[in-house]
Image 1: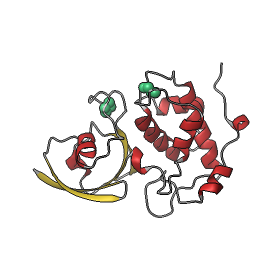
Image 2: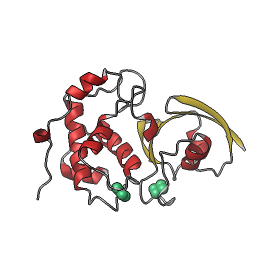
Image 3: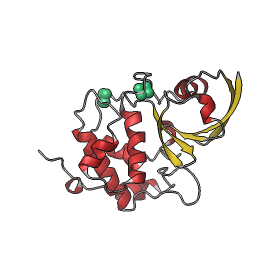
Image 4: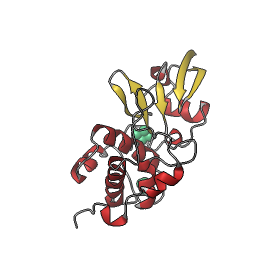
Length: 198
Ligand code: FES
Ligand code: FES
C-alpha cells in the first residue's frame, strides 16, 4: 500500500492505496465521488473524465487511465465539485440542462468536465472545434447536436460575464461565488443560442 494525499473537490484526502488502483476507482470507492462514472475502463468513452492539476495547468484526464498514486499531491475536480456551494450550477452544467444535452445522462459528467476544459483553452470555439474537443467522449443517446449547442450556450454565458475564472487560485473553470439571483438574470436568451447547421 502507498499513502497518498489528494485534494478532491476542495477537500484533502489522505489514504492508503494499492499501487495498481485507478484514480476513478479511488474517487468512487474511497472518496465517495460516484458522480464520476466508469463506462469502459479502457480509455475509450470519456465518462470518467475529471480535471487534474499538473505541471501545465489543470486539464481533463480520463481517470481510468491515471493511477491514484499519480494524483498524489495534486488537486482533482470532479463533476460533484463543479457547482458552487450555494447550489448554483456551473455555466456548462446549466447549459446542458437548458439545452437538453442529455438523455440517459451516463456520459454527461465526463462530457461536462471535458467541455469545461475545452472552454478554458478556447473560450469561443466553432461548432467544429467543439466536436473536435469532445471527440474523446462518447454519447450513445443524443446524436451530439444538443451537446454542441450547450457548449456554445455556455461559451456565450461565460463570455457575457455570467462566469469568471478565479483569480490566482482554484481550478480554472470553477465558478466564482455570485448571488444566485444575479446569475439567473444573466442566462442566455433562447434566441442568442447558436443553432447547428441543418
Ligand atoms: Fe474511462 Fe471509459 S471509463 S474512458
Ligand atoms: Fe446517454 Fe450520452 S446521454 S450516453
